[in-house]
Length: 257
Image 1: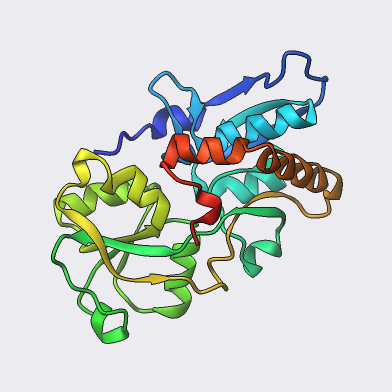
Image 2: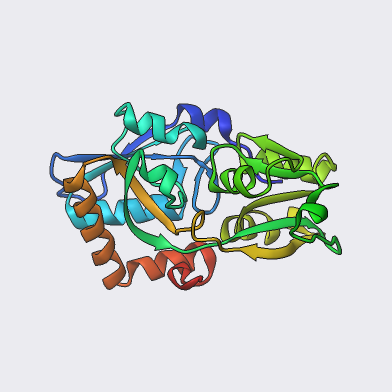
């Protein structure tokens, strides 16, 4: 079972220095803390994961300190706008709707949406094929937006986290869960609790919804966005991004699509 650490995530505000000689500047990152291996919170309340290490590497390159706050995904953009942190790094896909509220860095991972269900299940991606199915989605995600726009009227159940959606999949309360391909593969299918489950139906790659994962900053914060892009480019060029990809996923996620 995916370890739910929501209670710890809601109170986690872990500030760490990413460089022994870091300057006084601190970049405050907001993340979900419940989407392993991209981001998660340990039972001890420490924020960890691929994106956390990526943020630390970027801070190291920029000679800045970095801090992390974890909270529910659907509250990340409002919290950014309220200046509770400076950057969102939370497996967030670039979409036109989100760009009305935030500015994005360069994309660091391209992914697609996938359905997961019991092995042997069949799913046709059509109004008729979905009509008698129940689909689990995470609130505030691009996957929820996709269903609201494209498959309006389909029976969906919305959850605060992927952990909770998977729980209901395993208990039979929903037929399928629809989420990020890499995240659900690494965080569920490749784990012991994922035995008996598999991807079902086609991948969804509609660029309106799946524009790639990127960091988000407040509208107009060009200085920070440019700094993040420089740091990301340096981390990629140094081979650090690939090293972190292999550590957490077993392959280079920058080439996942």
